[in-house]
Image 1: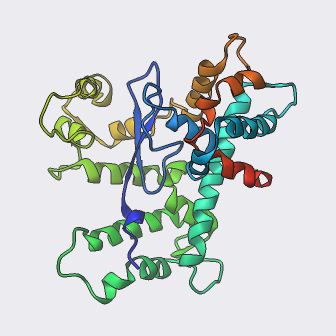
Image 2: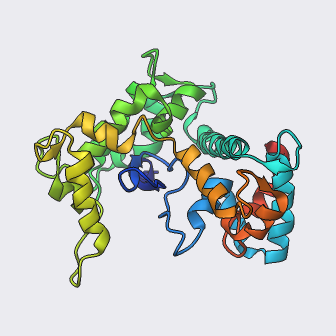
Image 3: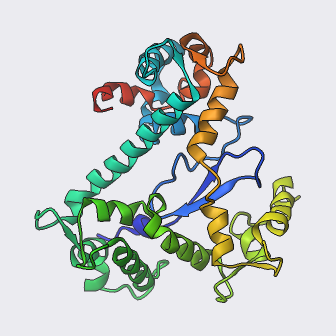
Length: 313
């Protein structure tokens, strides 16, 4: 069975306050915190996914406000590592990282048995290729919206980058790097390369302003949104550092994987700012419960499933 989702790219919007607007990270699988827009004026869905994880944030949709508060109270006790009755920014950061790691672990576990077809504890490139592209290889379609040959070539290139001992056999760690390259330093060049390839339309291996905007906005008539003008300004002031009108690999790296930006820390600060009613720099359980819609909401998140599996944390 062909799995085009494994070769698709996801646009992630990461919250930022004092830096060039939003950091966008295009990756092979899921986003670091959430692939939703971080706009609290519209909803707190981004915060829900950052706090709980994408999969968990869906079951909570069916909870009443009372039940979501009750379950949130249990989670708060887990976050409060030192049992002092308060949740600090550092404890929030540690919790968000736990949620991230669990998402990555679950993602790998869900797919492992599908690709390890001989059950030897390793996934060879041939196994991955046959499972992902087997039907295409057996009977290539005459017409298709997907360029499967290119997708397969890109996957092999990424597989080789993740395969640190070059034996074309991926263990769990290597397969994790393949599925989630943004979390591994030795995979960052591949993430940047794939980003440029997907945005670059004229084939010069660079990203110009038109390509940069076109990746985020397709005009469909009517008045252009204000944020598009803001992004143009961002391109000239922050993205194109050498002012040659285009973003090269180094500039693209700074855009999608900035070394001076910690999205977990930014989200923890954001949650604290939104909920710290007495502005003492920490959150009581009551403050979190009073702001439950920021953390888990009700009828809007998947937090219920987290509680059902809380021992896994």
